[in-house]
Every structure is written in structure tokens, then in C-alpha cells.
Amino acid sequence: MTPIPAATSVCARCSVHLGRSCCEANDGEPLATLTRADVERVQRATHRARDTFVEQEVFEEGQARAYEALRPGWRGYFRHVTVRLTLARAGGACVFFQRERGCTLSPDVRPTACLLYPFEPAEDGAWTLAVEREGSVALALASGQPRCLAVEEADGRGALLRMFGLTPESLRDLGRRLRAEVQAHGASDGGRGRRPA
Ligand code: SF4
Ligand code: SF4
Image (tube, rainbow, N blue to C red; front, top):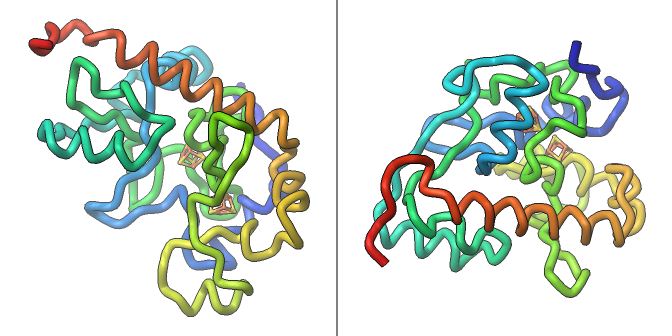
């Protein structure tokens, strides 16, 4: 059975403290983008049929180009097929989410995009945040916007990394893993037939 991360982690408290976490999304709001490597890892661990946890979003060419332009780590994802794979939702949240516990997938199975959030690593080892910081949990809650409990609670960049069990080196490695998985994803046409170059 898939082990469940400790209920005391910051992510397990996020939804209760902020009203919703990055694992919850309203209609029209996306959850994390998946590569085929993510899908295969989750399938191997959970034995779930792919269509019970994967949704597909068909992009126009321009949308796909804009998506990659805004997210350097995802460049090449749409090389052959302009379809975004994302996590399926049930009741306004990812199918693997439980409100009092957070993610029910173990970290070694979790999609790479989920492991990286709220960090936005660059190739040179630097990183920024993928979410705005309000300065306190109360302000984050009052903003009504998607925010991150860890970002609000952390006392500095090192503390934020430690909350996720990361170091600058392991975060850089995760960024490299994402880029490798995105390149492999983009190199395959998923059996659909390649778009003209
Ligand atoms: S897989 Fe886990 S971390 Fe990712 S969105 Fe779903 S519940 Fe959240
Ligand atoms: S990464 Fe941030 S927003 Fe997502 S569940 Fe954890 S604390 Fe909440």
C-alpha cells in the first residue's frame, strides 16, 4: 500500500489554515501539469487506470507556445502534441488529495511538478517562488488568492527549503529531473501521429 506522508507536514495543514491548498482548484483552474513519466510512476504505484487520475486539455498552437514561453522548465512539452496532461479532480481537488492529510501519494511517487511547488528553479541553481508571498498567514487568507502556507510560515529561504526536506542541491536536481522528463515527454507523440515540423 502507498505510504502516506506525515500528517504534521506543512502541506497537510495548508488547506485548513488557508482555505485551500495548491491541490485544490475551482472549475477552469488548472492543477499540476503531468509528463508521461509522472503518469507511469503513479500507475505503477497505485495500479489505477490512467483515466481515473489524468485529465487532458487540448491547447491551440498559440496557447501551447505561450505556456512554454512563460515556463522555461516546460519548454519542449508540446513539441509534437498540443495536449496538456493534468491531474483529475473530484470535488474541487486533486483525486489524490485529502483535506485533513494533504497528498496521499508518497513523495517518491508524486508528480515532479508537485514536488517542485512552490519553487521555480533555474538551470544555474538559483530559484524563485512560483507564488506570491503576503507576509503572514492572516494576510494570505484575507487575499482570497491561491497562496502557500509554507511560504507564509517560513522564516527565510533556507527555512522554506527545509520545510520540504530540500537543499539548494536537491532542488537543482529536481529541476533537472523536470527538464529531463519534459524533454522525454515532448519527444514522444503518444501514438497520435506527429504534427508537421
Ligand atoms: S498529486 Fe498530491 S501534491 Fe499533486 S496536486 Fe495531487 S494531492 Fe496535490
Ligand atoms: S506546497 Fe504550499 S500551497 Fe501546496 S499544499 Fe504545500 S504549503 Fe500548501
